[in-house]
Length: 139
Image 1 (cartoon, rainbow, N blue to C red):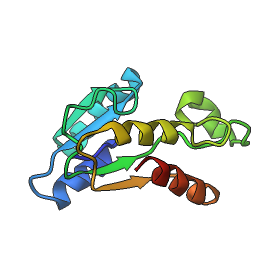
Image 2: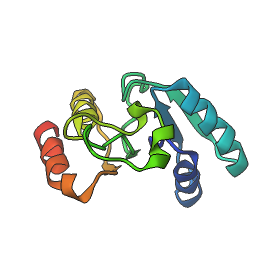
Image 3: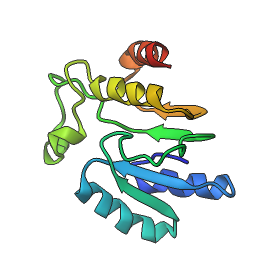
């Protein structure tokens, strides 16, 4: 299983890893609608779920999985470019340090009886050490 907010990574996982299943989770139903529409152009077989992080994740679906996670990670006071002004703030900013959602995610992963084998995340290089510390705390 791969958690991918965008459809292209899910398609590539499905293509490169035969017999894999791909699940995309997002809290925003409008984002899921766009992802569903876009995934049709890739002929990707993706299950889409509206979820606050992993709260709607089916039981044991994280077992033997790779989670591809692209949560908002920009610190609240970080200056953004003009093109990002068109995005909802919740899609960009991840709290004071930018890692609040990752803290919540790892807390939820800690509660899973079967955890993912790997996680791939996105963050600023300056956040890598802090993100690793969050992961170590919870896992």
